[in-house]
Every structure is written in structure tokens, then in C-alpha cells.
Length: 269
Image (cartoon, rainbow, N blue to C red):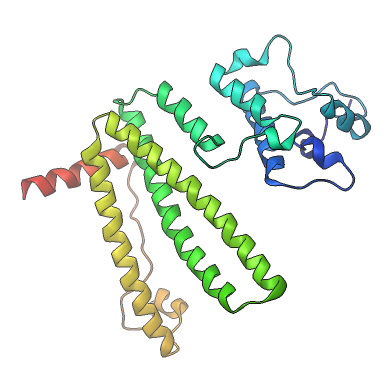
């Protein structure tokens, strides 16, 4: 028996219609199927025959992936409820990814209740997540500004496409903000506010440095100097290639250790 194609497994009921109803809600449904697979480590509908003809009617009847026994036993009650909410047959009954009651917010709440906030592994994970989210926010902000500027002079279909892309970036920004806020809350609750503030300070320093680099590149660009020539060290100017020396695994420091050391040096000055 051939397994059901992965795309068909995660396809929302409305996508089997003709014409298919395409929306962000279909992505929420696909997320639910993926989460089910991660929790159960099983292939959805593995015993289904004639998937191409059976899936549409089956999904509209409310049939969803199952395993022998109860698949909900393979995860927490909260996550099982979220999965079931996300694979509702009616698209409007599914949550969004962003927002106060969206998927990201629900997952952040579930995680916060399960984590041991004072453990080193938790602190390291939250610092890394906060760093990633804040970096994503900075990049997304710059991209949004570029799309806004481009849309200001665009017309017709081009303007509509630019506005659509900008809206997508704004959703990305909301997700990054929610991720950073959740990580910060966990760090605060675990008594690691100083580490969090030091990381924000380090990121501010890096951002200022990058702004200076961009300004220098613009000046160089005005005189037809390429980044490639700078990187190859063909010119008498600072290089823009940063090489990290090899560090044996046993000597590598975690994000928490690096920030703690910098914080200690700052206090001792």
C-alpha cells in the first residue's frame, strides 16, 4: 500500500474544493498536522486507500489522523487541545498564528508552565531565543521600511503586491515580538533580569556598529568600490570578513557564560 503523499496529509479540507479556497487558515491546519506528526512520530492516514479520491470527503466529515489507542497520550493536554483547534473543518474556527490568543501565544504559555525557569538549560534557551527574535525584529523593520518606500512610488498590481508583502512582514514582526517578550518574561521570573539587560546592551552595541559599517559601505559604493574587493582585501581599508577561530568543544562558552562574564567585568570596573 502506498503511503498518502505528505502534501495531501497536511492539506486543509477547503484546499480540496474546486476552486480551492486559499488562505492563512490553511497554513494553521497544516501546522496542526505537523504538530501531530512530531508528537506521535507516526505517518498520518498510513492505512488509507485511494487517498486522492477519499481525502476530501473524509476531511469534511471531520476525520483526522489517529493511532492505536489515544494519540493525545503522546503529548500534553494543552498541546492536544491546540492541535484539535487548529485542524477544525471550518477555516474561521481556526486560530491565527499571531495575536494574544494565537498559536504562538498559546505555545509560549504552555512552555512557560512546563519550564524550570532557574535551570541553566532554560536560561540558555531563552537567551538564545531572545537574541534570535530581536535580530529578526531588526531585519524585519528594515525590510518593512524598504517596502513602504517602494510602495510609495508604485502603482496598480505592483503596489498591491508590495503592500501584501509588507503585511506579511508585519505578521512576522508580531511573531518575533511575541517570542522575545515570552523569553524575557521567563528570564525575569527565573531571576535573570541582569543577564537579559546585558544582552540587550550587547545587541545595541552591535546594531550601532552595523550602522557605521553600512555608512562606510555607502561611501565606498559612491566611488565604485565593491564589497567583493573589500572582502578579498584588495584595498587598504578595514575588512568586512570576520573569521571565528576554532575553539575546542570543551572550551566553548554558552551564551549565558559569555554574558555573565561581560556583566561581571562591567560591575568590577
